[in-house]
Image 1 (cartoon, helix red, strand yellow):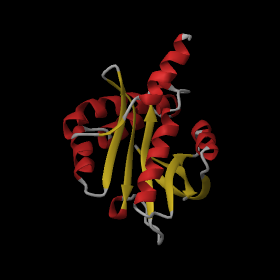
Image 2 (cartoon, one colour):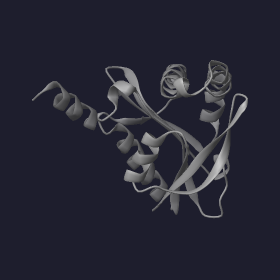
Image 3 (cartoon, rainbow, N blue to C red):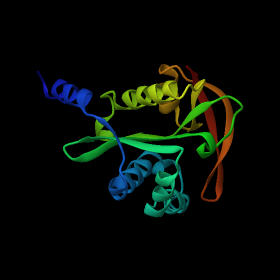
Image 4 (cartoon, rainbow, N blue to C red):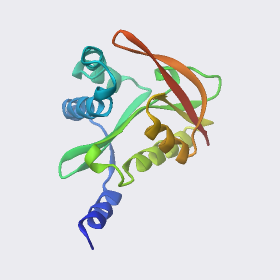
Length: 182
């Protein structure tokens, strides 16, 4: 078995775990690194820094982690965080809809681990949670200038149903809202 297949077999079995408060410092560092690598080249350094300083801090993650209608989940490999997601329901959701729904607010995979099914596994995990909560659908927001993620979400059964404005530094960016009916 070649290295890629061996790693794929290991990652397929890597547990998806609920993030504990003691994990938040490492999660903030991971989140900042992956977010900046994903979007830094598409934004000004000033806007990127302003957003990271607002959204990716230990104080902000601790506040979100403490909310009773939010959860962070992660996947580790060799004691390193390699993927995570944050889900919200009820009052914690960024947008409100009349139907009972679950939001995937953040989902990121380390670039070195793209293509191993980690994003798909996290999304399937959120679907199980949403089904257990009797949600009608799962939804998420994705930047309109992120065609790879849009295509990935579409491959997972999500479709665009609306948009919202996402404040990013001194810009107002457009996010597509995508949902998957359960």
